[in-house]
Amino acid sequence: MRSVEGTVLQLRCSKCHSSFPTFVPVGDTDYVTADVVVASSAGKKDLFVTCLSHEEIHGQVGEKVVLHRFSRDSHRDNLVLLRLLRAENPQIPSGLSFQNFRRAYGPPKFFYSCIKCSGESEVVDNMSISAFRGNGGIINAIGVELREPT
Ligand SMILES: [Zn+2]
Image (tube, rainbow, N blue to C red):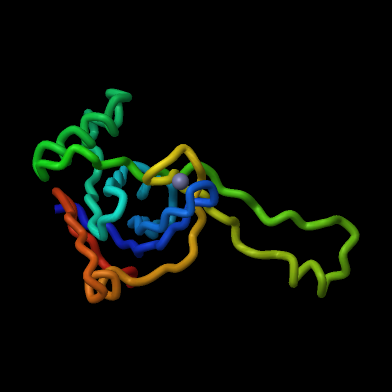
């Protein structure tokens, strides 16, 4: 079975203020992580995680097929795919001294879809898989083994 290293992010929507978790793979390259699909429902602390198969990726309809499969297997009709929408690099004004440049420089900010509305959600916290589970969170990993980053 394929194994994916990752972490759980707590997200908050800037539009409707919903707060919800998602799983994100921690990989060296986009190639490693691009086919991981995560779904959940508003108000639940459970995540469904799987990897698209080769056919699903190349069929262009992969995510919809996977969502349908999750819904069927879990008997839930309110699952929503959680997607990474965009990454924003920090705005660094030109002409800064090196010290101020260092202060302004940071990792990119990631924006995810919202579980309830069409808004964007931001990362407010991140935790290990075991901390999430210890907190009552459930991760249903389907056809994939999820591990803490080494
Ligand atoms: Zn929202």
